[in-house]
Length: 484
Image (cartoon, rainbow, N blue to C red; front, top):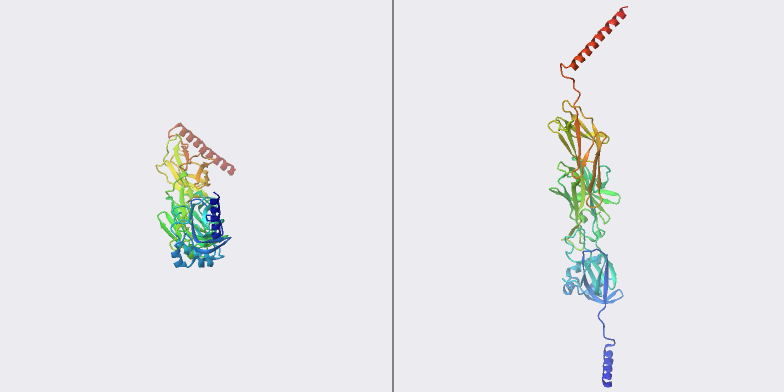
């Protein structure tokens, strides 16, 4: 037994003599944390350079496991030479951006590591020392609204943190409130009015990372709105606003309006990441407009470049749709007699108060109709006038009334929540769903003289005769006084 122990001890001593050290352990691995991430992304890490890591320095550099070394060497040269050229350069340096773009063409089909993103921080674990390129998986965001690909990230891997370089534009569609003049998500207008709309887009915070940038406004009008062919585009920087319509094209297909800059970098070089692009136009609220809670919706979105790593055949994303809604109402007048039976022969004219004066909205001439519908009204002050009165009936006194509405503009789907009409001379009922304001006008017959030959007529004749006789007596009396 002692001999066996002595032999093992001697063997161990011999091994230590040859190696000069204990048996090596498995290679050290590291963790890379990406901050500023959101869910829905698939991130890939490709080892570009491998080597020996000491502190922040990578030595004995070779092409890494994530690169086709043969192709990369032929196109870009030796790994050590490329690494030396990048020494001390930040991710945002032009040389680093150019190298990331160039080396991306020689990545292997399978990344070194893949992770699904989390909200806030996403972590790669088990990475060997080296220089890595981090990217979104190709085409992983296709069809996803409001997303963009991160700019390529180059990172020396030890236990470290990097921030994703992705940003998306924001977008909102609004309509001008006729009463306040402010833009909002919903308001009411009258049929025939030209309704002003506004589309506002921001640019991404990493706009400078793009060599080309597409920005397209996609606007779809409801059938109740007719585009007036007057779209204009403005570049807004702080409090400054400049008309830049010439940098965009406008096309119209049916009820869809498209305002597009195929490459904003070329057509509008003065735009920056802090700029806003604003489209304004008007549309007429036409006779087919829906009344009531249905509303007349106008939806829009923007299509934008969403991958700063591509040139030429760029990819695009689309924002969620933004909606602006125009509500309108109708007044229904029922004409009846004292017995509540429909009464023909009346005509009505509706006026709206504009800047303190009443302006005619619509006039119905007399005929066989007994129900009169004034479609397409907004909140405001009105006057209803009986412009023609049925024969034998008293004319209605003018009715001044006020239409009021309540619109909830909170959230993505504005709603009409209340509708009323008030007057000192009439009573109105409303139906919110259809936007109907209804009133009943009762005509009473006028006071008639008694029929010819009746006792009443005789009495009138007698009274008239006495009045004439009295006038004659008075005339003679005055003449006698004058003679004396």
